[in-house]
Length: 414
Image (cartoon, rainbow, N blue to C red; front, side, top):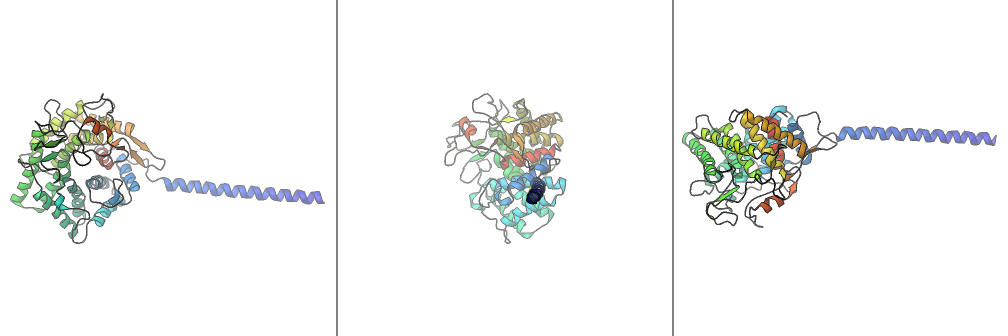
């Protein structure tokens, strides 16, 4: 009897153990399944452009903190990524993308049109770039505060200090200096604003001044031997980075040239067909494209310092590569460039995917090997040397890469 009782107890304990194990396994399996569903942030079946847009939103849920910021700010990096997301929205219609762009404007522009953290008195061309995102929103759903904010940006450009020939200083604290960056930051927005909100002679004055900026870059910054462009030009020849005879910086920096190329293809979207400067800019673009494909690496991407691939420390870099890919693709798609350049663009994009892009388990994509920052002068002083360019921080998902990556993907329908 005692043995039978012990036997029954053993069976009962075994039953309870099995039941507990099964319940635990079911819970674990359910939890695992739930986690998998929750973790899939970005569909791996979507196009690269949409995948990057959603990845950026996942990385930076607050659009005012794009570029790894801890405090909200009005900056060109926000404007760059948001402009790219706008274009993805135009293709997909995903309301989440529109809401993200609007969230930035809503947080950064007060009811009276004041732009949070912006100072007109700095006369910083970089600060104009986010105006493109505001212009787009205003076209979609107008708000008085958005128009007032754009009026302020226009006012800055009206008073922007210039060189003796009328070239915009890059910033008030960088006197007599024109950088390649500045044309992308300011000119597409200013052209759109002028054509929409100004009249007659006022419009022509702005458009002529915009074309002048391109003419001056061609005059001063282009190297006739290579067809490449120096990052900066100092009319005063006072900067330590500037050649005492030419006023030019020392090297051909990939992203600097990328900014200029994007400025050309984007201004051509806006500049009227009958403007006399339009054909000149198309010719500048053709010369530019001819030059950069000569320096495209066999793998499709481009080097941080374009013309020195074999020099120790140089590296294949993602932001400039994304920009060049976009410029070539858009130039060919629009008919400014020969269709042959589409092949270079496709090779560039494939190289970017193979060399720089990684994908997380949740579908979020990363763009690696981005030069984090580079400039000239300032404090600590940036001397524009080869060592300076190749030793600046390299990081993943820099907005100066993710934005142009989306531009390029859209042009190539990828």
